[in-house]
Length: 482
Figure (tube, rainbow, N blue to C red):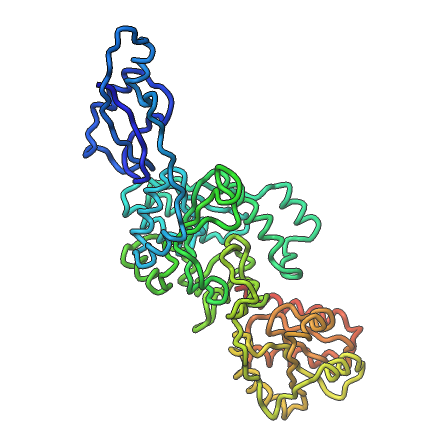
């Protein structure tokens, strides 16, 4: 009796024998000794055994007998594997738990899939992978700008799970060119996209070229304006995998339908290592210069690239999952209709012409304190009460307090002429100084703002540079970095 092997799309078995071509008689005997019930679930195809009646014609060629007893028998062709419909699979898994989704991903792709670990809640993915009992791989992008706490978490995770994280680093030549040409913090001036492209996107592209699939911690509630339509599994719309070309990489998002609170309940229940920054108010954690804690009630992504508009809070790693701006729901987190803020009889609302006149005055009758704001900005909203209270106190001291809405059409003007970096920006126009002085601190309580005003009211001559520099140095030293 001769044996032939045909393949089907069901994903079980545990051997690594060839799918086509001849093999030795010894290997054929080994295959014959397997029982289907003994096979484990680590390969991506099921191999079924068929018995073939061996004929014995008088003039039979012995070489054909050898071939007939191996994996491929003349006249029996290997069945071509069906192309997976991942859109349909995503629908089937819509109600599945993260554990079930993780198990399916690891079962289908084995060693050709890896978990993308950023050092935040992605540790939940590693814990789910451990619970499946299957082997798994983990990789991470080391941008060179991560917080010390993130590196300590990497070490703790490796020890907890007995793994080695596969680190990918940015190209040294590209980083050197960026820093030499534009400085270490150019992203504060012209946006974070270029830096992220060099330090994150291109390294990720290289890492994914060695895989057929990857697993991310994306969730729909992370950014309702840009990530609300994340599928559980998809053909990656941006990156290429091991085989190259469009459709060569599959992307799994086991946590897509899970809310952030549930992820944290899971992490606490399983008692796994977490980033120490979470206890300091950090929720979404990226590079150190671009991440800060969020205020109570703020959305977690507000702590990322806080100096930019809400619609820009993506680094490019998940570009294919970002909703377009012309969607029926806006990509900007700002509501369509917003109510103005800093409403008080003690706060003057300046028009474009008004603030231009203020800029031109070289000899003002009284100092002016002006906030550049956007009414939809949560940081502006958070300081509204303190700014209004400050205006009441300064009214009796002969200091004008004003506001200028600097978003929308006025944003470019505010950047070029008013030192706008992020919302809110606070400027003091002294009586005799031609140029406004920008408040450098993140502290926006009444006492801090009052100290700033009181210190700089004494600057009467714009040529008193030493005093001005000394005052600015004092304020800068007291500045808290988020």
